[in-house]
Amino acid sequence: MVLAEGEADEAIQAFVSDCLNQFAMTAPLIEQFADFARDYDVLLCDVWGVVHNGVAAFPQACDALARFRHAGGIVVLITNAPRAGSSVGRILDRLAVPHDAYDAIMSSGDVTRGIVATRLSEKVFHLGPERDISIFAGLEVTFAPADRADYVVCSGLFDDTRETPDDYRQLLAAMRARSLFMVCANPDIVVERGDELVYCAGAIADAYTAIGGDVLYCGKPYAPIYEAALAKAAALRGEPTPLARVLAIGDSIRTDLKGATSFGLDCLFVVSALHAEEAGGAGAPDLLGLSATFAAAGVAPKAVMRRLAW
Image (tube, rainbow, N blue to C red; front, side, top):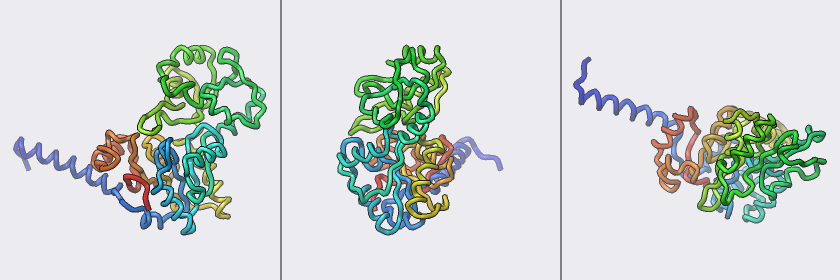
């Protein structure tokens, strides 16, 4: 069959629309978590952007997690925070995240500590703010400046309130000249802090990789943090949980969605400021716009929510 020019354009548009709609159907927009949650025994829930925004807790999200636990489920908060899980817990307390919203915390800081513990004979340069020093607590670490260190642990920018990765070009070039190995304690590129987006360690690590630097990323989307989180869940449940009964929840395509997909987990995608432009705003997300973004990334969540709520 031969179509006229106008008909061909319409046919192409209809085909593209159908493809997007089919993709969207794989990621329906849901308003309530309760019915959806029944298919899972364990939640691996992102923290920043889902449970809080760096300034205050999200009461509906905390309530949803608490209700899941009260129904017999296990909640492990899985975060790319570049500090020990115990330190993350104290931050959650300050932000008024209730203890009944989670069973355990697994942070990229915990994974980083495990790596540092194997390199105690080497001198480390800590690239990051002083507040992240707890990542080394209890370890007999020898610190050194970049020009004398054996490797680098990057937990962020020294001052993320005013600096950008561009401010680190000279330092990264000097590190690359010495072939310093970098451990990235937080693969996130940006994160919400109230109404702003600030740069994280992942932005520095990516800039270092771009000039040929050797980087090990410790958090999502990489497997070690999922393995560690599921080990905690297994200890709490008394047995391992089949991956089909584990749900990851997050707001980042790059870390949460890709990480869950790579590990073989379903993912519930929560719209936040990280993808507000593609989503048309967190309050009224454009599902087709999101689906196109998912398609471009080659991944799809099980469902989408404006915000986590029971």
